[in-house]
Length: 463
Image 1 (cartoon, rainbow, N blue to C red):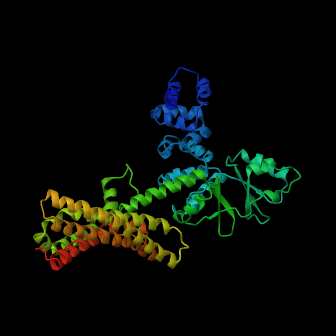
Image 2 (spheres, rainbow, N blue to C red):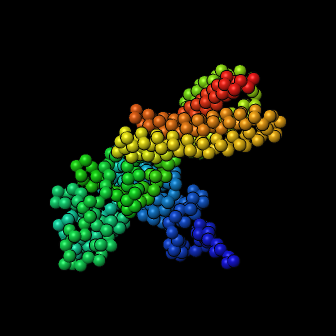
């Protein structure tokens, strides 16, 4: 077997260069061979005094490149004088600069924005004016734009001229004579076009776009499906003000998944290592209080059926089985339903069809698992608990039937609860996760002990 090639530790190599006895010119020459991401990794391992030396050696433009690969660049930007920090921000993509400023206190933010050049200041102020959950807050003003009345040669000349300032060149955006968004051109199509060709022939006039005030979670699935390098951001007047790049889309999807994961756990938002104990408690405690009282309700229901437990204590052994399986099924239906509800065009008929489908799946799975429970639990009570075979399989039959019934009901609950919250404009993820778990516990307890009480005690009179 061939030995796997070991990936070089570029950050370590860069640190060795930085700590070496080379001249400044030689150091910069050697480091220029590495990617900015690896330089950023090494940069974070330096002391503050060492970083300040390299701020001077790199210069604001290269520092801006490095900062774009650092997770918390605002803490490093604070190590620079305000005028130097403003220069670094002016070289960064407007969305990255806006993200850094958003992490700073209002006073510092105002001072830095005031020191920026007019164009950078305008772009960053525009991005900061949007709410965090709006697409405008995610966009960058780093893109190429031309008008639709140019020739192929003029379009190429305009592209080359703008590429010095904007490096997102894989898609060229086109405006009409009223400066409104007209379409887009793939860079490859523009390169292979002949001078005598008509620019209009290579413009995609039905190119996808988003509006600046659209909510991120409402359109992220839509734009993700296009798999484009960038998507234009338009105002209500159809003016092109920015683009969402593929990197921005990936980050937005990652954040949405993280938020949904947090919500399903009953948190109001994702937690991080920087949060204080009080902040984490504030996110977790409200739902835990609600669930405490719902849990008391579940316990009270168990108390109602204490006569069943007193007469047939063996049924207590299988309570957790019923509860766990009902909870699992409900969570599966919840995940499917939340995913489907992202489509705002769903009709009432389609939603009803989803409920029926989930109940059908719950029934089929429940029937299969119920039969397995009937066989194996029956053998367990008969052989290991030394009960008569009839007595053993009557109890296991009740467990299997209860399991199937609980799974069908849990599938229905896991589908209807998020639909209800979606209908009343409450995020189904944050409201449904912990609630469904507790509701399914309640359903499972009532189903299991109710059937045991009805079938085993009153019908079959197994006293």
